[in-house]
Length: 605
Image 1: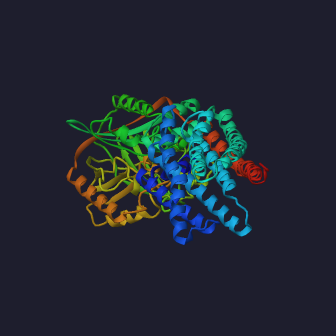
Image 2: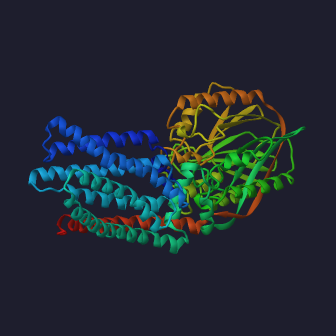
Image 3: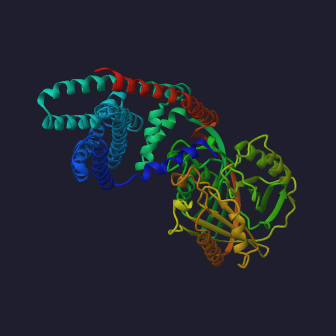
C-alpha cells in the first residue's frame, strides 16, 4: 500500500470533529466538573455541596468561558491573517481539548497539594497554560499555512484569557496587596517558560521540514495545510504544490471502440495512467472524469501503472481525452471478434478476447492479493502479446480485483512478472472470428457511497456476445476489491444467461478519503453489491445489438505526473522524517517540558 494512500487514512480525524455546539457544551460541563473536583480535593472549606458549587463556578469562569471566547477569537484571528482550514468548529474543538488538558493538570496538582501540603495551584496553572500555548501554536502553524510568528501570537489567546480571568478573580477575592507579586510572578515565569517550550517546537518543525525542502522543494507545513484544506473543503490548491515536484512523462492509452450504423455505441479505454493520489486531487477521479468526456457509454479500466503515474492536476486528464479522440479517427472497424478464453500459469490468470486487429487481456492474480502492475511490466505484456498473436493493438487491463492490506505491486524482478510472461505464451493466436453483439448498462449505485468503497460512476457492465458465447465485463468504480469477493460475485451470477464474467475495478482513489488509506469494495454490503451486478447483467442483455469493432493504441505525450523519481523521493523522505522524528521529538519536547517544569515549580520566584 502506498504512502499516499496511508496518508489518506488520516482524513477521518479531520472530517469527524464534533459540531461547534457540542464543543461549547463540553467546555461548560467539563470546566464546571473539574472546578468542583479541585475544590473538593484541595484546602477550600466550603463543605461538599459548597465545594461543588463554588468550585464549579470558579472552573466555569476561569476555564470554561475563557476557552469559549478563545475558540471564537482564534478563528477570527487566523482567518483575518489569511490563514486557512481553521473553521469555527475546529477552533472550538481545539479550545475544548486544550482546556480539558489544562483542567487535568490543575486537578493532578490539587491531588499532590493535598498529599504534600504545598499550594501548587498557581504553578500547575502556569505549567498547563504553557503546554496548551505550545500545543495551540503547533496546531496553528502546522495546519493553517501561517507564519510561525502569527501562530505563536494566536496561540497566546487562550492561556492569556485564562490567566487574566484568574487574576481578576484573585483581585476581587483577595487583599489588593497580594495582586502585585502574583502578576509579576505569573508574567516572568510564563514568558520564560513559553519561550523555552515554543523554541523547542520551532526547532523540531525545522528539523523535519528540512528534508522536504531540500529533496522535493516543498514545505512540509504547506503540504500538511493544503492536504487538510482538500479534506475539509475539497480545495485543489495542493495540486499547485505538486507542480514543484512534477515530472513530464510519455505513456500509452489503448482502447476498443464498438459502433453501430448510428455511430459509436461504446468505448472500453485502458490508460496507463494511475487514478491517484487521493480524494479529488490529480487523477484520482480520472475514470469518471474521462468517461464523462465522451457522449456514449464508456468504461475506463485500470491500465498498467502505479502511483508514479499519478497526474498532478485534474487538467492533465484532458491530454488523455485528446489522445483517445485523435486515435478514434484512425480506427478501422469490422464485425469480427473471437470468443473469450481463459489461461493461467502459476498465480497469473488472464482472460483473452480478439477484436478485429487487436485483443484485450484481462489480468488478475485472484485469489492471491496483488496491487498495481508497473508500467514497464505492462509494456512487456503488450509487446509480447502483439508479437505472439500478430495483432496491431493489445489492450492490457489490470483487473485490480483481489486486495489485502499487505498487497504489493507487480514490479520488474517479481515472480509475478514471469508468471505473466509464461501465461501470455500460452495464448492460442488462431481463434475463430465471428460477428459480435454488445449490450451496455450502468448504474450509479445511489444507495452506496465512498464509505462502501463505491465511487461516482458506480457499476458499468458490458455484455459481449460472439459465436453464441456471452461474456460479462463488469467494472466497479472502486479502489480494488476485498480478497475473495470476486469469486463470490462470479458464483452469484451462474444462473444468469451468460457464459463468462470478469469483474474489474477502476482503482479510483476518490474513495480513499474515508475510513482508511485503502477502501476496497466488498468490505461492507456485499449482498447489495451483488444485487447490482445481477441487475446490470440482466439490463445489459436486453441492450444486445450487432456492432462493428476496432482497436487503437496511442502515446500520451508530456503528461505531468509525480514521476518515478519524485514518487520514490517522496516515500523515502516521509520514511526518513518519520524515523528521525521518533528520536528527535521525544528528546526535544521532553527536555523542554522538564526545563519548563523545573523553572515553574522550582524557579524560586
